[in-house]
Length: 220
Image (cartoon, rainbow, N blue to C red; front, side, top):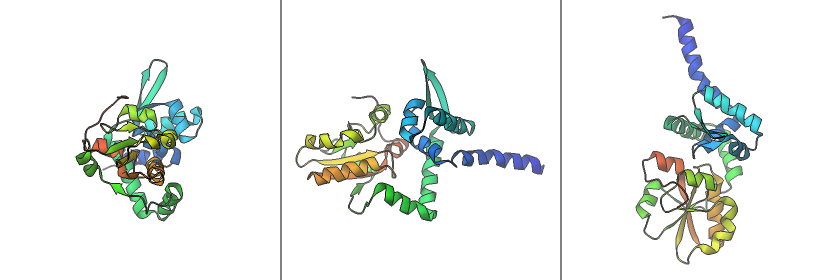
């Protein structure tokens, strides 16, 4: 067995780790787990210039984590496959369990979750169509790419004005991108403050889809 060949193989494996070594690239994977996006939209989501975002996407592409396709004058990026989503979920879980700074950073970003009631995806699946109102509080483009059947699109900047749309006595389940997404937390807090009963899905839409649960697309 040639040591050089073994070293080269493991160096190739390490390319995936290197691609995740930048926080903005990790954010890109998190956004692309919701559906394919153009570079301009991705740049806005991670607060970077289009040029910097394009460079990060090329690193992810060389590592085999994202692919792209042309749609007219636009280039749309997406994750290479569901294994990339699973890897991202595992990376977050390992970091949350073993990296001391993750808990503090999550609390500073997400706020105190002690008062937020949560519901599992299996429980939500059982309750669909049984009087529960489901809010998808991700950006509208992510909702259109795929959402829980029957969910209503309530983008983050529309939450406050949509509070009065909730009928009295109806419970709202809000969900967004995943465990570390703040949109659902903020929506639940706003609903509870307005006197509504609200809980958040303990995961997000990518986990729902990967579990093989029903998915709807488009605006209807």
